[in-house]
Length: 181
Image 1 (cartoon, one colour):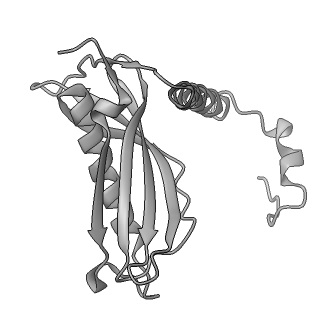
Image 2 (cartoon, one colour):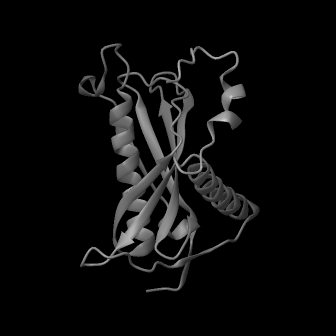
């Protein structure tokens, strides 16, 4: 296995026609279907980079920016943004295209943390990432910062670390009523 790879070497994309079977009760494509496609392409990209079976460890921030209509083409693009020892962050972009007008809309961007596994299900070392462009450096740095802030946020709100009195002011102006025992 190579020690380092470029993001271009692992980049993948798929395009799929959205069918009535993909729709929700509102007549738009169901968000769960899009999430399933996103997970599949993140897996394909991570597996291609690591040359291993990969599992999804986490998904960072899923915002549905624009609805997708039945009959539109959906294109998903994935690339490696960050590599650790056994894990990698895969950036996934979702676009819809109206086939009659040609209009393309950005529908979603999300970040999947994928972990490479060996044949015994143990975490496996992966190739590092060769950064060739400013965009590569920006994506890597953003992913690293997102990872660090998630760790800090999680530890800050653990039960044993949380101090209620420090957060009471956060409740001001919110749609809550404080009724402590």
